[in-house]
Image (cartoon, rainbow, N blue to C red; front, side, top):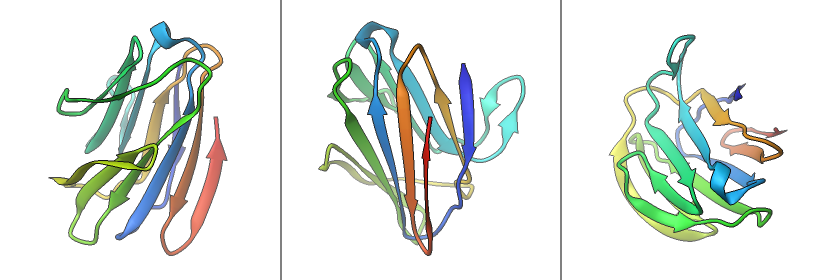
Length: 132
C-alpha cells in the first residue's frame, strides 16, 4: 500500500526518515519529491531509497547500506540551499552533494508492507513529526 505525507520543503532542511521494517524479505520503497500522478505515484522524486532482502539502494541503484527486520534504522537527507542533497544512514555520511533537485520537495511516498513503519521528521524553519 502506498501512503503519502505532505511536508513543507525548506532550503537548508533536514528530513529524517526512521524505519522499522516488518520482514527483511518484504522490502520497502520511500521517495521524496513533489506531485502525485495517480497512475505512477510520486512525480519529480529527486530522492529515492529502496530496500530488498536486507540491502538498501539509492535512486542511482547504488548499494548504500543494510537493514534487518524489527531493527530500527534512519536515513537523514540534508537539502542544501543550492538544491544539492546529502544523506546519512544511521548517522554515517553516505553521499555528499550528490544530486541537484529540480523541484521543491513537498511530499513523501512510502510503500508500506505488512507492519513496517516510517516516522518522518522535517526540520527547517519549522518542523513536523508524522508516523505511519
